[in-house]
Image (tube, rainbow, N blue to C red; front, side, top):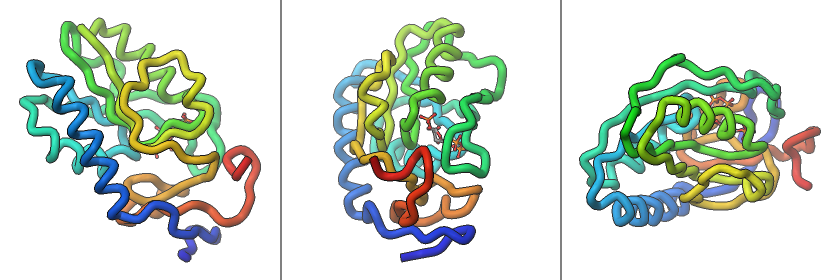
Amino acid sequence: RIELNGRAFRLFIQREEIAHVVHHLAQRIRQDYADKEPVCLIVLKGAFIFAADLLRQLSLPCTVEMIRARSYGAEMTSSGTVQIEPPVLNVRGKDVLLIEDIVDTGLTLRALVRFVEEHQPASLRIVTLLAKPPARHLRVPLTYIGKEIPSVFVVGYGMDYAESGRGLPDIYAVETSVSGQSPP
Ligand code: PRP
């Protein structure tokens, strides 16, 4: 049990399980992209640790690009507005693998897919470490899902609560109920 910014969090996914999930995702992606040189598009900030672990296991001749998307700020619920930077992306004619840490409401992913598709990639697939229930209803190519989790707010392994907790090697879930992202 830990405390971040006055909130209690409990251990939710241990590092061994994360490593197992990442290993299996890498295996699937390596097979699917065997004859390709994808652009691995890392969604900052949350996906930086997941992407670092995944990329080291991919053994693919990929290139790496980064994109910043944010909608949560210091809150546990989405603001509903997704800010994307930079405004242009060099992926025309490329096979893009977008790397996300978590899909919750899907607002971020929807905005990112629209943004990437405007830049005319040859293909676009998404890998996310975690997906919450609303992700099942998304009309976007969510090809690789590491683990489905219930609607709890999580931190660690790159993910934050008001910028705290990103460096935690395990994933923690908030203990106290809050509106929006608390257990169903
Ligand atoms: C988090 C996370 C995803 C997004 C998922 O980003 O990294 O990108 O929220 O939520 P959604 O499916 O409800 O849109 P956040 O806005 O917290 O920015 P960060 O990655 O910099 O922490």
